[in-house]
Image 1 (cartoon, rainbow, N blue to C red):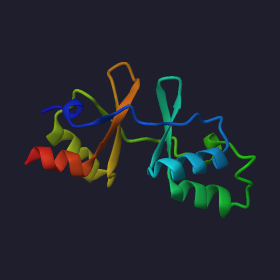
Image 2: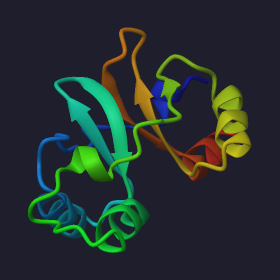
Image 3: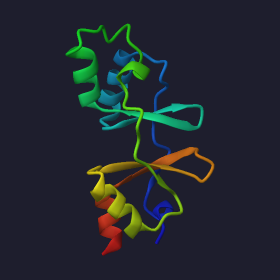
Image 4: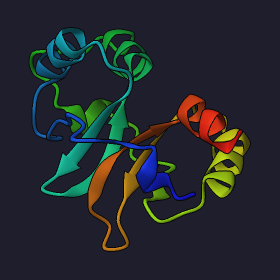
Length: 123
């Protein structure tokens, strides 16, 4: 079975040019972790609570003035929507990532898949 059959589509994301304060408010209202960061349809990073805490707050920066681009993690482990579930489970486990962004073969962000969803479908 392929990832596209178990992934969540229509996932909220944020622009890297938004402020960290805006991102934190969005994360709070949506109760999501992590928050994908996209420019147009392209995934350019992920923003976690840890990113905000370590890079912005502990760094003494003002979240109302810093952009998401400064706080986000740009190196993103992701998978393709047409990859087999077993392969993506291995990828997730090897990289110790619970939620993987999903892109199509043209590199467009199309959703997210959790290790829990993958594991349930694999069994």
